[in-house]
Image 1 (cartoon, one colour):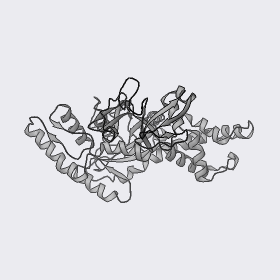
Image 2 (spheres, rainbow, N blue to C red):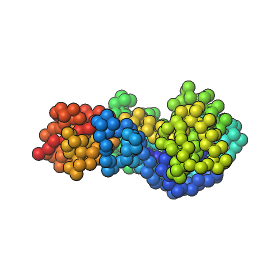
Image 3 (cartoon, rainbow, N blue to C red):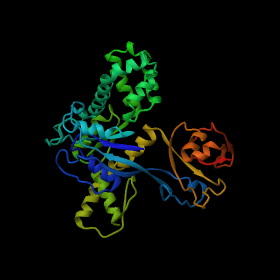
Length: 392
């Protein structure tokens, strides 16, 4: 899974990315600081079954901290977007090309209104951040639409004269965007479009582009810089009409850096921290500001909440723990709850077996859940399930 950190240039994307990954990336107060995409690893968090089962786990592909499982997620911090990116403006072509591989996006918006549509600095509060909430979706919709328009005659020919299936052909044309045939089928069904491409007009192409983008590229909005006065005001004004998550990437980065140096005790997503080391007056003031203006007002910095919400709520993923021995909750080497797998809601046991190891699926005979009850191939996995897959 790959998540893109996207948005207008100079809104704090790289700070947001660094707050999630603690990678040493360039952060600058100018437009197009990021040109080549930065790649790193962040984590989504979920309650680990270890406490419920009364065991001490030994994670291999993830981490467990005080009963919270941290699962790695690949992140991509791409070049900033400007209006007209789909026409090649700014770094548009490079930006959109970088997005091909991403499964979902966190769009970082400057809620303080201190950067205009081109990412240039303006007086704080003078630019309305509502303007940029929809424009990323618009640019991607236009990009998708442009790809289809350029290839529409070829698609029609393949369906009419070669006998190809429209859904299959559309998926083939859009495969470079990491779009599945299932998503194509769902988009056509949702819009009640004809399966005869000759009957599609320009409006149908545009509607399909919007629908397929919404289905295949999930997105949430991170309302960054809410620690600023204008940021808080704009968030309160816009939260009723738009689904925005209040964030302060600078605050999250400061807390993580302080925790890294053992100055405080802090876990990502927490609503507070505990001082552990000796702080300078400057450090005390900075932490007091974060506590008063971010944590007490919004419950957290919002950064961890953003990635968790995108993966679990928007993308509908769940966490499943396969073990070799359900009685010991361990693998063959004795590691307890060693692996945590992120899979889509609705995944059935035999499908999951294929994801764990192809041999398991080939010789699959059933499974056992945490209560040691037998479960079959069509058992629909639930979030937090611990399962033993039985195979010959």
